[in-house]
Image 1: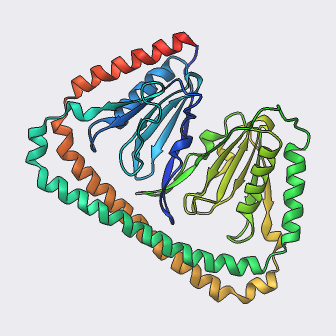
Image 2 (image 1 turned 135 degrees about the vertical axis):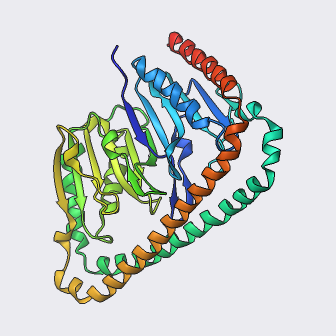
Image 3 (image 1 turned 90 degrees about the vertical axis):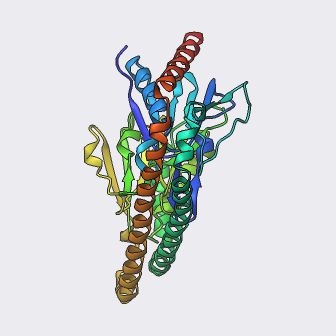
Length: 371
């Protein structure tokens, strides 16, 4: 058996609606074999614990998923082994996860059992100060993202007034026909998994779209100005696929988390992706992918659009300024979080944690033998 592959995604994000979580979609608890929920403070080794188990399983030929942290580019919030129905999840703030079916399906691994309390108490004042500062920085970032959304809404409302949405609807129906018209429903209840394919991070907008397109042969790339109906088109195709009994992977917008950026329809070996300037995905980096570009700007009244160029320019400036301030706050929060970790790392018994990790790995391998 060769080495397994890794899919990269985000289960939560820093958005214009605050921190938004799709953690309930990391794994289906009803179908899960085992879910390990890791608890403990910053720097106790939760991410390393999960990553090393994931590495061991890929070496043994299992495909895995890395669920990344939107507030720390180098950290993981979860690792999933789909073939075994097993997940390891960071259950700490801001995405608090607790067992829903304790013992039967999920359980807590408390890495706080392996710290030296005396060492942490020695850094008590600074830990409290850092924690309080984090409690200010993230709300400040979310306020800026909300301000950016107001500016984006202004631009979108003007663009929408210049659109011929009858033509957009025709394009949408044509794509539905091309992608899924000939596929037959399996008769089972379709699965719809909702997560993020990109995130607003301390280093700006990051994405893992290319890792999600394994097995996909056809990509429909939807271009257009904000307000041209890109999200509507992608969402409509996702709904139609689900109505026809097809499983879908639905990836939401990092900025507006209820909107959809990407839908993957595995049975059709097709994906529909909203082209987002800030994300900057380039389809040519995915080998063997046939890309069909659909430009909704073709449905714009260009003369009317030109009449609002000053309004659109102003909205763009306001959006960019607020967005950059938000990233600045998130970046500062990462610095403070790293400083707080510096008190926890020396207080941890990582040798004992390594033993716990190996014990957990052996349990996972035991579940694999039962499959």
